[in-house]
Length: 120
Image (cartoon, rainbow, N blue to C red):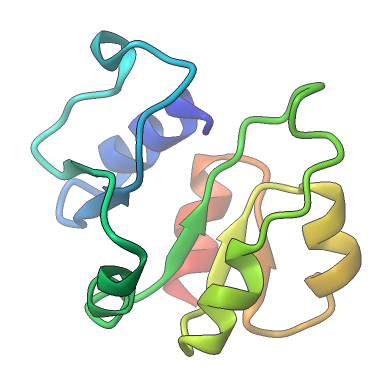
């Protein structure tokens, strides 16, 4: 996850709630951005996830772009699409190639782009 990107989105839209569900791995919890509108819920049972997604307006995939993410194929993309949510992602190769031409999947490079794509 691009923590700086998340922090900047939260700064740009202090009236939005950024709900982060999932375990925090490969980063210290002390390095997570903290703001009144960022909520770190941690790991949840898979069966609980649809209830969370049902309350969201958009599904964000702010992946960091680096050697570790260059060839990932996020399963979250079709899962979020199946839930009926619009998806906004950084330009991860498999997201762009597999879903980039689908109207409900939007690609953004930076925080301003994520905000604009989320408001569409």
